[in-house]
Image (cartoon, rainbow, N blue to C red):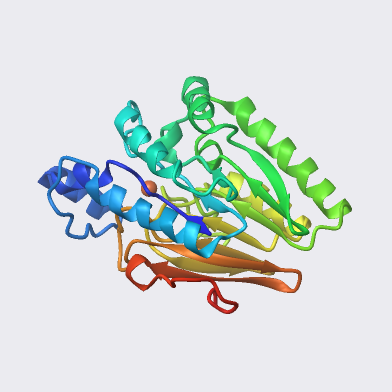
Amino acid sequence: MQLADPQFGMYAQLSRIDDAERIRFDGMGLKLPFAPETYGLEYETDHYSKAIAAANRLRPDFVVTCGDMCNNKIDPADELAELKRITSTLDPDIPMYWVAGNHDVTNEPTYESIENYRERFGPDFYSFDRSGSHFVVLNSTVWQQPVNVPDELDKQREFLKSDLRSAREAGADNIVLFTHHPPFLTYVDEGDSWLVLPQERRRILVDLLTEYDVATVFSGHWHRNHTAFFGGLQIVVTGATGLPLGPDPSGLRLVTVRPEGISHRFYAFDEMPTEFSPGLET
Ligand SMILES: [Fe+2]
């Protein structure tokens, strides 16, 4: 089960947005949906609780949350407490894997912001195996903007290379990558934007993914659903568990990884299946 952008605190921020801020969002190509006025976290609590309840019901092998767990980049204490309170209701037999988003490490990560992240959520890049397939997590904000932490980018790149090589040597059926930013949205050579990785580092990443035949990148960040392809590589952007920024409602994605391929489908919370059955994810 993949979640993205539960982003506790975003409803409160955007429901009280002023005209200047609305123009700024328009300039980023984001049409803000109607956000009900709130000063609290009740909408994020509702959505994320539904996601965790769905996990307890459908019993996926694991849950992964692809970044922007909280909205406040500087002091997310209240948001984080609510996120953790609800996460603690996830059945302990179902692991939760966290992925760092730009709100979790700031848009220009520093050693301090990354250290804060690691204290809150654990490592920001790592990998794990499940049922014959290999899953890798990267901190894509460092790939987006490494200016303050160049050696963190180097470490991730070296890690990725040796990790992918050993996964292939070990005979992994599929290799899947989880990030916050999608590497690109339409074409691998498209221009730079806040939504994707800059061309320079995108190319380094995509070359490695291609070399080791990585099947799919699951990401978030856009708060809407989208897919793109480059050769055998599929890029999946998953709509927000929290506040949507486009036509797709709040929800989550169900994914099945089989030796012969990967299938997946986004579900809005009001159409979530009550129990898992094969084919639900297609
Ligand atoms: Fe986000």
